[in-house]
Length: 404
Image (tube, rainbow, N blue to C red):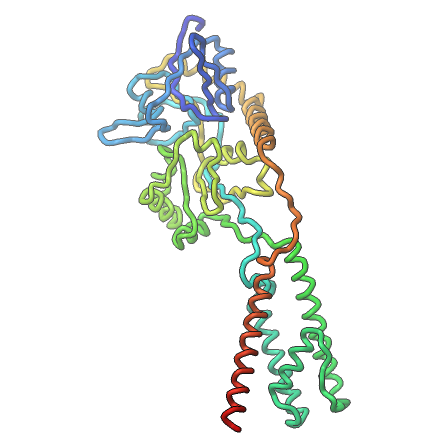
């Protein structure tokens, strides 16, 4: 096969099949799939020429049996082999031949984790609604019982004010002896000490290290977020993900697929392998290995890769119908896969990506001092209380003036 020359159709994608050209010299290819393909060609001793489809797509079927992208070049006989992480699908199988599978991956989505930000009145969210309602019920029931115990010697408002101050660790201001009701008073004191201590400790921990906000993890949650208008979902143009999702029996996948078609939420092949996760409310659908390659070192800290898979993708080299040498290539792919070469290349490229990224990014300082924004809800409550007190004060002045 030394005198054989193959025409190879590929997509120029960073980290996957990166083509470096220079005048008068053979193109140099790198990336996961580029290195894997170069090893195969070296072992087979085959010369090759790389061609790139002008539309930059994998290949999707158009009207009258025409195809775009890499599949289209194979279908028209413009190339012998297609190397572009091509998934094996039924419609493609009728047009081109596929070789030995070298990658089986799940199709899922990745999204940036929600940042730790203190929101307005976030201190009230330390307890859920059930706990707050239980505290309010206990407070009003106790104040009502104490009001009757005092036999109307104090107004109900004074009783409420005293118990509320006691919950804020102020002493009870009841001069009367309540020896007969020691059990009830003691129960109330234990209750206030427990609740105030738990809340104070939780509040200090929350201010020092805010809790991680909820990030969408499943396609159902993603569909709900898209319906609310808080999130967008993108994928690469020309992929088979959209036709599959639109015809899926899962209503959430169908909804997401239709929204992506209507809103034209697509980007090119090169952008998919650069840094597709740009905003916290942008989710990207793709093969899991792409996210492992791009964000392998940031899975735990910044990026969430959903464990909810929409489809299983089987990847292989594609050949034009009637290509003579696919058996030789399949044999070589099988040998290399048995030796674990592909996984080794994937790990090396992911590590190189992490090294280059870590040099260009400054580490964010985790510790910081509290700002006015962090305590804004406390200041707002204080301002509301002072405003109400001022209005009551004006009301008393007006009432006293008219009474005199």
